[in-house]
Image 1 (spheres, rainbow, N blue to C red):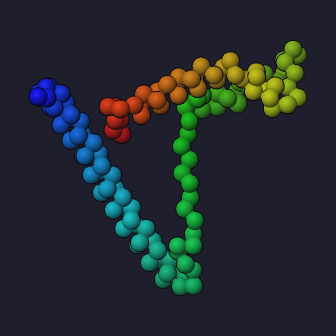
Image 2: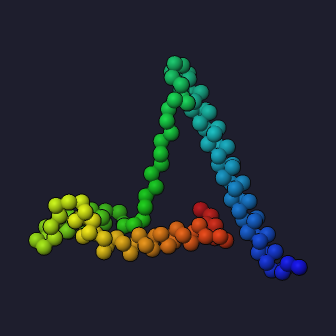
Image 3: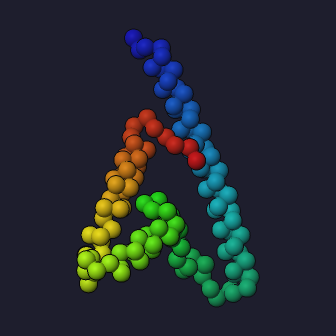
Length: 123
């Protein structure tokens, strides 16, 4: 027989995920309606243009490996040094690796935990 606390936890988790999916489906339906409205408006102003021929624009998601402008400051701080020869991108990346590598490893660890079983961040 199943333990009652396990079943309860699974029911709570399922309800949470089902709610998240329901919210995403509503958002998807609103986006679909907005896209149909924009397509109809394009057809009014330019009947010869096929809106389906317009490729989707990829959204940019900023990574948080460094704060805004930090990477540029670090690169500029490396350039004037006499003992660091930066003739190639490889040498530059070797100079930046000690700064960025711990953050990249931490980010990968956080991402791995986020995608682990039983952890569902709701944004």
